[in-house]
Image 1 (cartoon, one colour):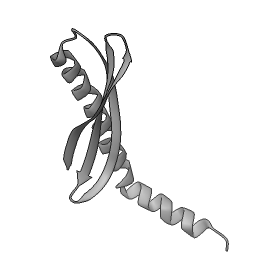
Image 2 (cartoon, rainbow, N blue to C red):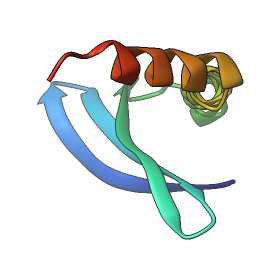
Image 3 (spheres, rainbow, N blue to C red):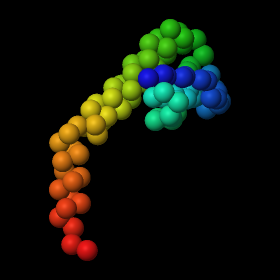
Image 4 (tube, one colour):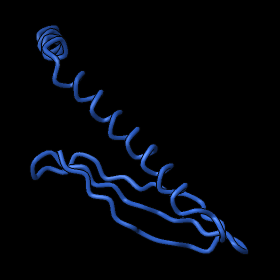
Length: 91
C-alpha cells in the first residue's frame, strides 16, 4: 500500500484565516483505492507543527477505516454471503 499526500490549495477565508486542503491518494500496487481531500483552518500565527500532527491523525484514521473495511470485504464470510444471495435469486 502506498500513500501519496499532496498540497491541493490554500484559500483566504477571512482576515488572518486560511483553509489549507491536502489530497490523499492511496494505492494498492498500481490501483488507486482511495482519493480524498482533507482540509484544516490555519490562522496566521498558528504553529505548522500542530496542524501537521492533526492532519496526520485525520488522514491515518481514514487509512485505518479503509483497511478495516478491506478485512470485511476480503473475508470468506462475505464471499459465502454473496454466493447465498446469488443462489437465492429466482430468475
